[in-house]
Image 1: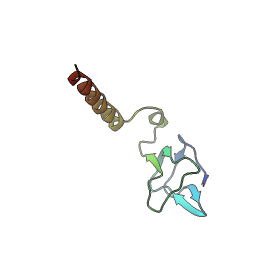
Image 2: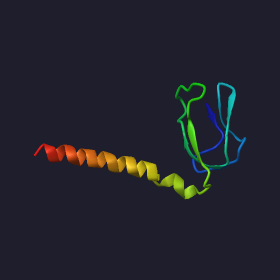
Image 3: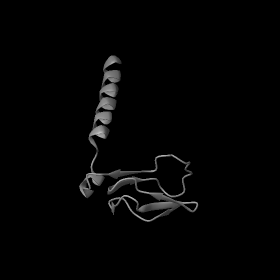
Image 4: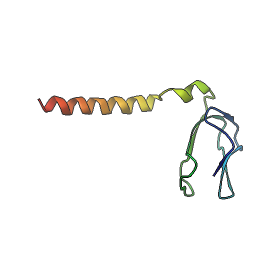
Length: 87
């Protein structure tokens, strides 16, 4: 697997993001590369291997997403509830 871009790079629709066993993986949309599978992992056709943020703002690469924050909040509530029941 050979990466042509790094997280935080601006990509355009059609850019080759990386190559897997000679197969080019192209960007479906333009934006900022927010996530990318690490080299050395096995992948299969159709597998999600990265994220492109169409808002095209590099600062979003270094912050938690709203979805991630909500998931974390739910986990924290579940843990707090569990320990409250143990008392």
